[in-house]
Length: 328
Image (cartoon, rainbow, N blue to C red; front, side):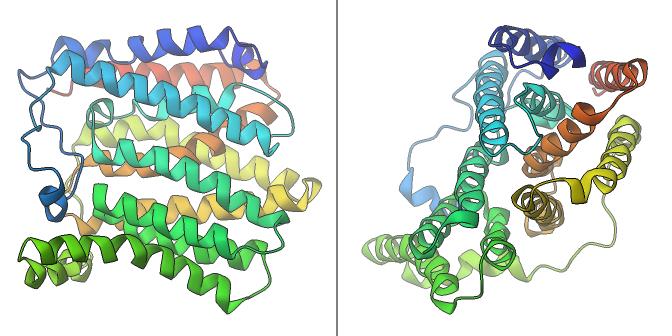
């Protein structure tokens, strides 16, 4: 499987579609009768007064989520190849993204974090472009607006605003105007939200939007044991990725090294921002899927022992499918 996707072949899109279906069979067989889909935060419900939570049947829900994953996988693959993060053109980022987004049952259905991954990939295109830009003010402003839109869809996305400043530190000399541009971009979107609240006589509730940001960081997370087990091959691949990255770090171009630094920062921000939501759901960690897919791709593109990396990926696939049948 890995050997097929190491080569940049358009026919791999078909294999991706088949894999997306295979990785969802277990869930579809045991899917509940109703699946809730909420794609905006409660404070934004004024913008969408219609009821939509149960608009899709479980099959339609999973099908649409699969289409989104395929589109995001292809966009991510284009991003990685465009900026030459892996050293050569390949379909591995798409394969890894499709795989990572099927790790847990909540990943397989439509959700706000899944939608936000479109915004995250869009942000990465702009963030990586900072390296060669002379004036980043307009880009930072656009990035601030993207984060604001993501916050409306899924509030923990607000923390990815930090990735703008981190990218400016990594890619550019310090310029306070560029840092301020990102804030202005974010404020522009919420200014219009405030106006909408005012026109609906709810301006007093506008300040409650950011109340969840004051939540205490939890001391523990309640995750089922099977979720820990499926993470074993994931953690093993991540360890091997860091080992490979350390070996090749100074052999890579400066832009590539800086890009991986930024991706690691986004990975941490996405993972640690889960506490903002009062009801914890595993689908939050879809925000980590984009950088994780790139990390996995880096290991597999640089792995030399075929039986080892093919077996490791096969173990990951078997784990995902097996635990889907044992989720319910």
